[in-house]
Length: 111
Length: 117
Image (tube, rainbow over all chains, first blue to last red; front, side):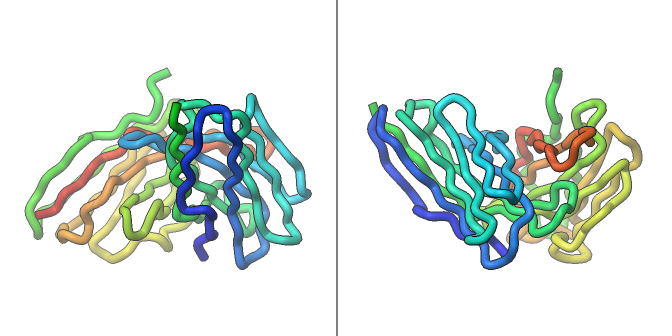
């Protein structure tokens, strides 16, 4: 079953923060985050495992709450390069990469 | 490193014709995934292989779709006969089998944009 992402779209000015949520109706084993720019392929951002760990690199981080079956992606001090569509992909059990992707969140960062 | 290579990048065909999409994964990667992306349905996993063996093809929409991976460096996705509703961007992705599962980042190819008239 497809995870649900919210919001569907968000518009920011450079330097502002954003949070993108990914919720599932099923128990999750892992959550994967990807970003896709228009006309390009999705690019990997990070993987989170059940256990509530938080990961991040640069000013993008994420958390995973297995009890709530949801993950959140945090973009801090957004840059123009952050614009794109963000997808979460979920695994209900270890499956060597069989991901079910959410519908995506369109992030637009303006100068 | 060349990355995942897909061909053709664009394909326009007429309903009823056979279409073959090709993928060369990153050397050394032993998992390969075929996805389809449309505005209506988003990014869907069609089939994936591990060590050239199909593991899960539950996402393949119909018998008109078939996929093969004859060796570690080549895979095909075939649609026969094609229909207008097959129009989409088809992505191939590969993933290494790392020593510590499940850090299996997927590397996507540039995609093939298929238009069936």
